[in-house]
Each structure stands twice: as C-alpha cells, then as structure tokens.
Image 1 (tube, one colour):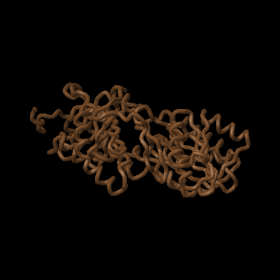
Image 2 (spheres, one colour):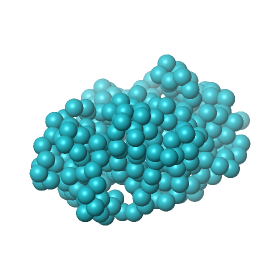
Image 3 (tube, one colour):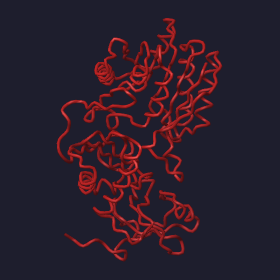
Image 4 (cartoon, helix red, strand yellow):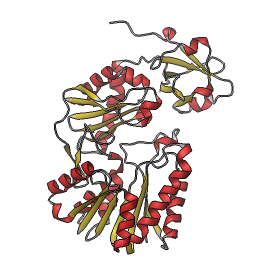
Length: 402
C-alpha cells in the first residue's frame, strides 16, 4: 500500500483576489469555477483529486475535492490541513453521522449522510436496517466508492451496500449513471420500513431516489395528527407518503394519486401490511389531470396534500416552477371541504420559502378560497441544514386551514 500523500505532495488551487475567502473560512463549502485561478498546473488536476485551497495571498484555507469539469469546482472536505482523506477519515465522519441519528431515532431507518451537512460533500446515504443505499454524487466520492463502502460496513455493520447512480447531480459532475451492488447483495423484494405508525415499502433497486423519501417524516407526522376520522387525498403520493401516515392516524379513507402504477402498488402493499387496505384506494395518472377530474366529479376531502417533484430544480426553471406550484394549489383548493386542510410541499431549492408560499397563496386565492397558514415544516433532523449552504434547506411544507 502506498503511503498517504503529505500536504506538500498535494496540488494547489488558488482563489482569485475578488473571491470571498472569508466565506470559506466561515464555513461555506463550495468554490465555483469562476472564483479560481486556473493556470496550467491547476488545469492538470484530475477530477476527484484532493488539493489545498489557498486564498489570493497564498494562505492555505482547506483541503478540497476538485472537479474542474463541474461548476462547483472545489468542495471543502476539511479545514484541518493536517488531516489525510483516507479510510480512517471516512470512518470518523460516518461515526459522527451515526451518533447523531442514534440520538434521534430508535430504529435504523433514516438518512445517514446528508452530503455537506454531514461533512461528506456530495454523498447521500440512506439506511434501511442492514442495507444502505449510497449515492456518490461528487467525483471525489465516486473515485473512493470502494473505500466508502468498506468504511460504511465497518461503522454501521451493514451487510449490504448498494450504489444508486440516479439523479441529475451525477450528470453535472460528469459521472456515470450505472447503479449496482457494492457489498452483499441487492434485496430480492421491497423492504418494509416503519415510520409514524405506518409501513412503507422501499424498492431499493428500481424505485425513485434511494427507494423512499425519509425527509418528509415530520410532515407525515403532522398530517397524521389531523387525520382522525378524515377523508384524505394524497397527490404525488409515491409509495403512499402522506396517505399511509393518515391511515395510521385513523383516517376513514385515503386516496393516493401518482403517475407511477409501480409506486402505487407498493403503497397498496404497505396498506395491506398495516391492516388498512379496506380504507385505501389509488388512482394512476397525471396529477394535474386527476385533480381536474376529481373537481369535475364533485369530490371533496377533509385533508388534501400535494407533494410534487421539484418543479424548479434550477434557477432557470424557477419561474415556470412557481407557476406549476400555483396551478397545483388552484386545482387542489376546491377539493377541500369548508374548514378542511390543504397541505402543499416543494422540494425545489431554487424556489425559496417566500416565493413558494406566495405561489401557494395565489393559487388558493384564484380558486376562490381563503386560508390560514397553520403549519410550516421542513425536512427531518436526519436531513440537517448547513447554514452556509441555503440549498441544503430545500424542503418546504405548508398546511393551510381553508
């Protein structure tokens, strides 16, 4: 085995004079390409390499992971320049992440690593008992995927580690879209996951993202608290998100709407395992079309919740995304009984909370309804936010009493 690189062996990246070195010193995790001096030596740094980031006066700032093919050209790994980015370093970061989750949850079903906020830039790890789904969404992590898998098994005792290569982020990093098995084996069936008294079926092999959306856990819990004796509509339901939580909370009925028949089949299996299949129904189709059809049918519900995919995944898509959120609110609001509840969610980091809230209010108003905002939620504590990175606070959940 080669000895680890010393600090003097590492390549150097330098900030331009006008770049904000103070932000890096104060915790900002990203350096964009236009902030760097890209001389001949810098351009030779291979994607995934570790380098020393210096300010314009050549004062070292941090150890960074480099990918000059990405707009985010350097990601801060450690401000302690004596550290070595090796197996032990990865284990230390993972132990810290596990320690936090052990304080938060009584069962090993959660997001174990939330990228920059857990000190592992671009790395997403979701834990499902003894199986972990790993998304190495940055070049440095992809280049060390075997080391990551070893560290993950050592720290968590996981028997199975899957690589999930889905999502647009890997494409922006110039990485492949090939998923696979890193350790153990892939599950031969969806895994049952207990949350909020409900049972969700997570398809870790062919499902969306890593198979389940852990981030909505606290908002599912709030919806559950509203659901005793209620008729519930869950739009963009995926594997039953809000609907199954509502059934666990005593809803008399829950209807899940999604474009994916496969996702709804998993929702039905979850309801069956909960003993709530007789109170659960599904409707497959485009959410906008189904909402319009339900309005035409005169359907009404006590609780309506819409949790769409990211309509505004980038700054360029922001305005169109906000119009889509407004349209969802306009179509959903008439389905809510007088005095009922409308929940509206966004996972678009490019649409901040004030903009999203404004779109929701406009849509409710255009439907001829008025609403009181009774709850405002975000992602659960296993999705910590890095204050210096607003993008890490992507999830927004608003509940209105109409």
